[in-house]
Length: 151
Ligand code: ATP
Image 1 (cartoon, rainbow, N blue to C red):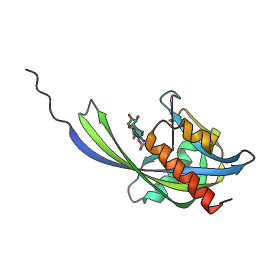
Image 2: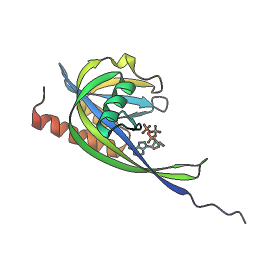
Image 3: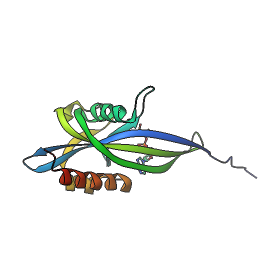
Image 4: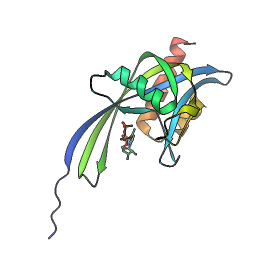
């Protein structure tokens, strides 16, 4: 009888951001596309050694979207599980998100590791996001922007 080794459990942490600007179309936020442009998500990535969560969030947003922003506030965190079959590992991941005001840069300069980066009106962006946790983060970010009347 074949025996199945129980999967190991590993914790992972990343930082990411909601970068926004005020345009003629209202508030816009930048999303990235992965998995052959089938999945739109918020920019995020692993925290480097000796880097704090906020610095990592600003760097990941800049690398993945091509955009530089200034952090306004924390938004919150999300957690999810995923399984890597080849390693037989179940990852329990937590991602911390920060709200950032756009300062400079262009989405044409997005990381070649992502399939695309684009600005979307914030309500459209909420609809485009693939993951429920990220939709909730963006909804919260929208409330924060409206409340603070930023820009
Ligand atoms: P990072 O961007 O932090 O370097 P990564 O690209 O290595 O991470 P993830 O984006 O965490 O990895 O994706 C790992 C798995 O988790 C994929 O199968 C992906 O579809 C899934 N996933 C990514 N984000 C979420 C989420 N917010 N909720 C649920 N599942 C997610």
